[in-house]
Image (cartoon, rainbow, N blue to C red):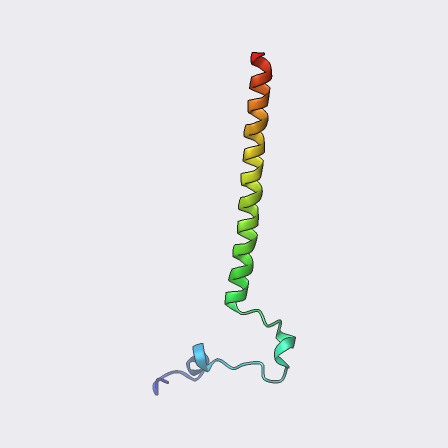
Length: 70
């Protein structure tokens, strides 16, 4: 810790006070890593939905074009 720090500056980062009066499961337990994984999973699911919709649209367009040629 910086000996010349202001009173509030020593309580940041790793020295930040923790919620010790509550059990660990009461805080939710979501770490930044958990939140990021959940966010990535949602993004991957959205990408898959968009990809499926694009493929369905392309296939539908092909069938309409094939029917138009016949």
